[in-house]
Amino acid sequence: MINIIGSFQNAFRIPDLKKKLLYTFLLLGVYRVGSHIPLPGIDILALSSWFNSQAAGGMLGLYDVFAGGNLQRATIFALGIMPYISASIILQLLGAIWPYLQKLQQEGDEGRKKITQYTRYLTIALALIESYGISIFLEGLSLSGYTIVPVGGIGFRLLTMLTLTTGTMFVMWLGEKITDKGIGNGISIIILIGIVARLPQDIMDVLRLVFAGTLNITYVVIFLAVIVGMTAAVVLVTQSQRRIPVQYAKRVVGRKVYGGQSTYIPLNVNAAGVIPIIFAQSIIMFPTTLAGFFKANPIANWIFEIFTPGSAVYLITYGLLIVFFAFFYTSVVINPQDMSENMKKYGGFIPGLRPGKQTKDYIDRVISRITLPGAIFFALVAIIPIIVINLTRIPVYFGGTSILITVGVILETVSQIESYLLMRSYEGFMKKGRIKGRS
Image (cartoon, rainbow, N blue to C red; front, side, top):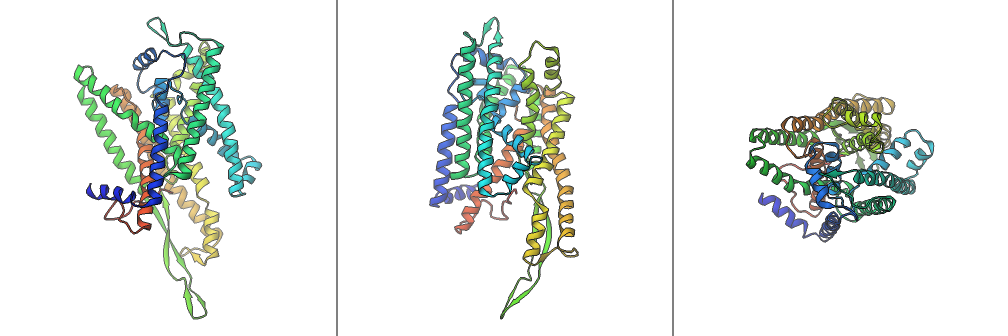
């Protein structure tokens, strides 16, 4: 513990790192302030009472995890960063089949800038659609005869659309600024802060129910044991690597000998990080979001019921989406063809394999073999807490999704901080070993 505190003190002794950390804390503080500014025209107390009357593991509870509790409080950041994530998913999927986007992806920085701009435009469109759905949803809510929205109509809907869309764009800007000038991935850190900010209130809610005698403390102990065990397992698997040995041939240039050393290619079991979980969560919310537009339609009600968290259809679909996006995003971030060509260019080879296609096929096969069990493991981590929450009726939603995001983002951010410390000859966070990079 003393070593960790000393490492954080060392972090603030490095001017560049100190500036990045303070900048990140400042923008996160701005985000938290905005998370307490309510939407105009909403009865906040009635809305809070309505949310408390619902099951914590419901679809709204799931969405509220990513929105950082802003949906329950109906703040200007109620949409959170989800429209931006959804837009990123859509463009990445289109990039696999649309030649124009494929060309942009190959153009380097200029191409990425254009794709980023298209992502922003699509984010605005999705935010307008989702904010309109939220305005209709809020207008239809009532508790004990009292409506959540005292004065509805087109004026309330337009104002809500404008406010929520602007809030989403501002959160997106905060995330991009943290990534550019702060420390860590800004979007992931904003989601992490939203999850962590909910914990004190969730803990207090559970304690009240335990002391009131309405919640069996045995269920709480079981839930905590599951969370602790899964957190340890996630850390272990997240840090796991498959190392492929690489040998570089000796080259004689004049009187000097270059190469000849042995090294390895570290392939993470979870190369895609928390992205598959975020992508899957965003996609699985889509059917219920559409169903919310047509509450009077029996088909829409049926869709809403079968995709309720805890249902068999929801759990199976959620798990399959996580596995799919794990493979998809791994194929995006790791290119066996490029790895093979780079090794061949610098005289490297995998012992027993020919450079070129044979090496590429081998790397591709290894990636597939380590990605599948990793994806299945993280799918189970995301699903099991949902089942436990539904069985124990604990009124919180700190499940597998929250664990994966929290562990992944913390490890990634700490890894970046430790890199700065080691470059400046400071000791890292661990006396023995080092925190491995996640991708």
